[in-house]
Figure: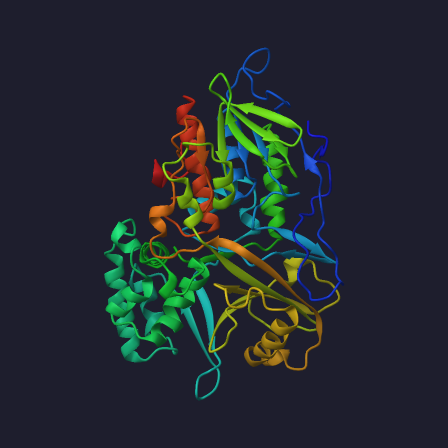
Length: 508
């Protein structure tokens, strides 16, 4: 056992980076030492002589992709070691402590069509803690209208696709009658597309929308309203293939596909504490604060993963880390052109956190037009805020222009904007304001990215890839991460000769 490892009996608070406050006040990240429970030994772990005869695997990376792969492998009888360099599981969807608050590093949502992530929630007994809306209902507040602020809604009714959104579109106040009619025509054209068509990956979403009669206002008030938070890119910078996948699956597959769900507890409760409990129950050895340094073949054709002070041998390895880290660990010959991974760019997400001394927002969330503010969520209850007041999280996707802005500048820009959007915030006291920045939050969904994304299998038998950046068909979402874990584990289990079923009926 690595000397840094301890039993998973430590408190369940998840760790994260110190939030950017522009000052030296505030609590730092809670930390947890590594764990080492369940099956597995040190050097030569998983060897099939003189010990457990089962096949063995090492999963490198403890985000949603790695957790999913480890769960699937262990459930099929494989002895699994899960390595994670951070002091907690969950990857880029995690929580940390700031004083008395438990804070998510950013607001994460999912849709009813995200069947893989819903499987994950069920698997960690967390579905009730991240419920879905009964029906899609998104308040859209335009504060730039000439006659003053105007509230609209994107919501569905019980009619079949595409009529389920027709009533909402017909009364959507942020578009003209002509623009609303053009949206319907574009949606029908979109429904006929195959998102997997390589030709769609070669053009940008804005070009396609322009060809189908979508005005700049329509793109701003509807298509980008959905596309920017799901793709992490505006229409001119987004692959049409990925955009078609998002809109066709979310809005045009079945009436409830786009109903929104989000965690009503800290993400660390789901992605760290509960996930760790399930891994432990399956006998997975989880080593936190443990980074893989090298992956190589052993003399007998198996795999060796070197970590500080230890070599772990296994029959299979799943690399479930970001693309640049994967590139650094890949053994020679594993991919035809490994440098393509370096061409998969990243895109940032900026999150602003504001704690008011009173309630300023009655709704659980809303999105804005005519303002730099994108999406605003009430995180008061999930954060454990006491003493009255309200905690709002503002999620800013595709934030390349602001990701490095000083906290003071962001505060000066966004607090007045929140007062424009929320009259109740005018005159309210600010108990706290801080920023979290994910500079490499997702892969950039630029046109042409599809040809760069590798599948789960490599040219090296027994070595597999996972991560939202791999060829899942989805953009960089929690759904894509879980799906990649399914694919990697399924490929490994097939090679090991172990019978297994894909958790999603659609993929059977």
